[in-house]
Length: 122
Image 1 (tube, rainbow, N blue to C red):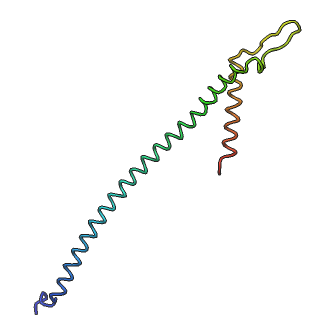
Image 2: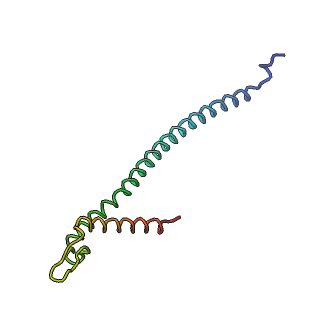
Image 3: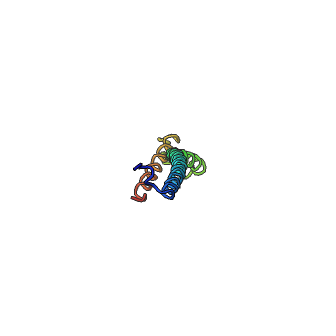
């Protein structure tokens, strides 16, 4: 007896249907893999952009403090001159303005760092 005659016609049609369904599923799988590759690339790019923004923001606060102190010092320099020593009839400024500004900037940067590390969620 021939083995090919063992199969019924309906069985062969079912087998053909299964092959077609398998091809359709393989094509859908390829499409989904390509979509996930695109999503993966997009997430990698977004992650890179966010890391750059974070690095820039860490540098920006230093500049913001510098600008703030410069402006604040110019507006209030008559009231906050910590380097002036009164010697009776005259006053001596033992700390130049640029050193005073530098001290104010350092104090604010230390304070900012302290606050951001202690108040940051763990």
